[in-house]
View (cartoon, one colour):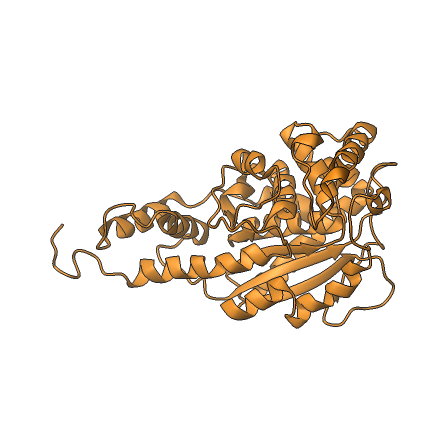
Length: 348
């Protein structure tokens, strides 16, 4: 049995007893029932994930993956492709958006190269390169099915390495010029909508080029005919190495009962891949923020997720996940330390 098969078979629903115990405590805190809104939802979800009324959520990490994309040659992104190789070491150095936010919230960043178009080893970056970028999905499959499984398994492996180091909350992030294009293709395929409905500007594509981008995505879907019920097939035909690796982290966290904080649009595509492999993964996801990219609501409706934040962000990298870490920790701290009616003799 492969690692992917083993992991996907060992994902179970949240512990209802622990969820109920958390709810009972939340209802006894000195406040109107439910008045802390999503903070209460987070605490009940975490209790169900950890199978415990009380839990430690203090040690957090964003696992970020980077890869390049053959579809870049179709003119779907405004920036040069070498931005990927130039920017990704800044994840490890803490100089980019997600790195800076993680420093502020006291979280770590692990940077993993799964497909950057370069030969050199990057400073501070783990080398798990599958190959130097995917193939052009507008001319054929982005990768082989075996490569799709490999990037999923890299994500699983990285999640388990972090869990072994006692990380209690894991976020996902990414880097890859043109990766809104495969993400849109994945979402269009699984949601069942035309790419024109959800194709956005990504990192700053001019609006007059949006139709071309949508046409390229539509062509790739029609040419490769991915099966929307098979997450691995969709990933192989119109996905990206970094997207598959993020989906692997979701699977790995779910099988090991660790919450996984998803970021924005690219991570939504990864979340859909994981969900198609095993729908129970949804129960382990915390949506950090509502991306400014088109298509956000369609994905969140399928996954039945309600984002913690709405900041009009579209940076990616894992920046939204890192920002949500403090909300998660504040929720847990309040849950543990706020007085109950019994403790202050209010008798309610």
